[in-house]
Image: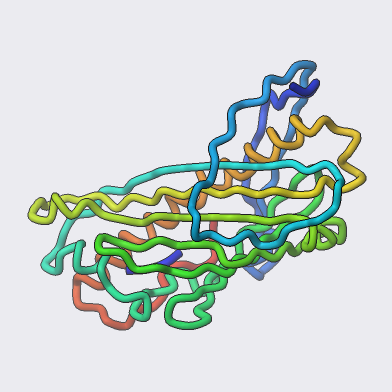
Length: 253
């Protein structure tokens, strides 16, 4: 297997990708935000994993915002001679990193992931995630250990003022073991709690939370299909007898 009520309302959020230089880690995602005069704060799900540990906790009494996003997506995979369930049960030490431009192996079960640079209120943000993979019978559970923000100076200054949690459960349906086609499913939830920087306090908290949640949601909508596609290709290579476990990704979005 492999890794990889306020007064403003967001009425449109455009999401695009562009290359900024030859280093794939610095390719950026840009968001265009349009505001109108009313806002109804949506209900926010809760990340309930008891074993996930926040990145950091701020003791400040400054106002805070909470962003939560969840996406669940699947891809159909045609089974080859070596069954998908066997691939999904591989130990983490045998995982391909999928994309060497964006994922580094730290040890058998720990990986460092460079998320694409994106813009939030015109500030560049590039999260660097340290994740641990926990093996499960029909797949794995990827949990966030820590998150460091890179990018604009105002963004870097927030590294001691937020906490983050993430769980991504990757699995296949073991009850369909004999079928020619099976599905790999990725179910990811991210929660971020951040002390609102002074420059942002002119905005209602609800508007900031709505914007942050939509940004996280758009990132998941982009990343999960790409992750599942790479996972499917890696299974096909493995099932065809390729034991090199070479990464297939090139850092492209």
